[in-house]
Image (tube, rainbow over all chains, first blue to last red; front, side, top):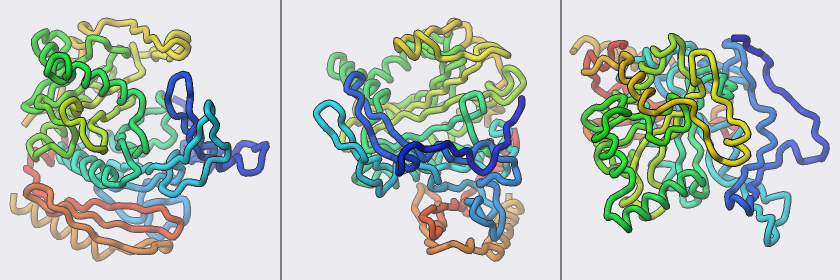
Length: 347
Length: 71
């Protein structure tokens, strides 16, 4: 794989004064969702060599480094945030169709290890337990802020999904609204609860456990499966077995079991084709606003772009233009493939 | 079980003694939080340009030898 090493920044000519730091939310009246306009992100660090990695510790470092000491896990405020705690007013005034609002929120980077070359599936289970604890802490701390409605924890892994820094890390976006995919998911679960008296996630979990064929892995507190309606060949969802709305509701055993399940899935992924498997990982849980405990159900979704050992799934006409995914494989078949892979050596 | 725990303690002390705040650091804040049976400690370092770093310290958290082994 070729690596482009342009550092520190890529800059693009700007036509208008002020445009290089424009940051605001613009409303799409058709899709009824907010779009973040953050032009300053064009200048973010792009695939730096290891010596210039801002997340590798270097004592008494200069401005390109965020980290000065060795660490176990650290959280850094994003230097190129899409959302900020004290955003400027929008440059464009709202009207009845073109609505704008301040790009208010918080963006953080979670550094999994100070070792730039670490492979997460090879890290000890204790690393994953620590990571779950850090996620829980950030969910609670960011969720306490009155302008935050949703704390979204995620990881983009691999250049195939657009990663610009190879140091093992994830991200957190604390939004001032509930993002549309999560909003739709929660509305469906709420509707199911009102009609059938059961959260939709709990219902799906019971169906998957009964069917068995799409199950990838299980432990006392979590079940991983390729969903019936998978969009990607190796898509995996991890559901908490109990109805737990968010990380805040986890006890110590559940934290450890989630860590075990994460390591298990990563081990299966990396064993699949013999290379570090790229993916987008998204944690879905309760918004940090009041209510929603009955229909919010903690789960993690993995979206790996590979559909075969050497072919990527690209989002194209049907997916981008019409919003309808085409999956080239069967969830039942891929569930079996991942189940047969060697997972975590369970304790 | 006892040896790795002591080792972690020594490592932690060495780490803390060698800790030097960055040249641009503004304030350092140490935060403790009850986390079930254990203390989860955080050290927040704020730089002058507004970027903060939170270092999580797990030196007081007990892990079994298996949890600490590489899989």
